[in-house]
Image (cartoon, rainbow, N blue to C red; front, side):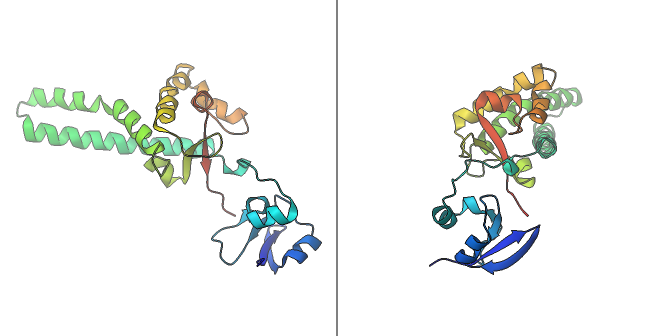
Amino acid sequence: MSQSYILVINGKPEGPFTIPELKTRGIKPGDFVKTDDMVDYKEAQEITELRELFGFARPKLLMQYYGSFDQRWLASALDWFIVFGVFVMLAAAAVFLFVTDKQARIYTSIGIIAFTPIGKFIYHVVMESSVKQATYGKQMLNIKVVDMDGNRISVGKAIGRNLAKLFSVLTLFIGYLIAFFNKQQQCLHDMIAGTLVIKDRLI
């Protein structure tokens, strides 16, 4: 049985409307709608019933889903803080529990903390290929990593994506700034690995 839909008109929710009423109003694929059972609004073309009734095509990914550069930058900063904090705690625990010489404590601490970039690489690979599809920083910003069809990426693709970040850095960070100049807001390493960073859309 067809449901009634609340329809966003000129930025304001109105209705609910029945299917015949939606037809009368000339509903378009990009119009936002919601039923009482839905948590959030979606575009009409994202809902199976409306696609079948109105002949809308289902898009792979919509532009409003792409994570912005500032979201990605803040997520990266949070991830560095998290990983660096873990290595600092590991270094502190190691030197106070197992090292007594003062000079040796300094060298041990530096040695452990020096592995932070490797730890961050592993952290990104594991988290981005997990069910969450995102590091803790990305989860805080409500963004995640997907392939070009919006699906979860494999461990291999996650490894390739994070290795490709070297190219984004070696280009004097121009590889990151590329995100400003393409519709999908991909950085260089995203283009190389065939990945996207997307976000949940809210009205």
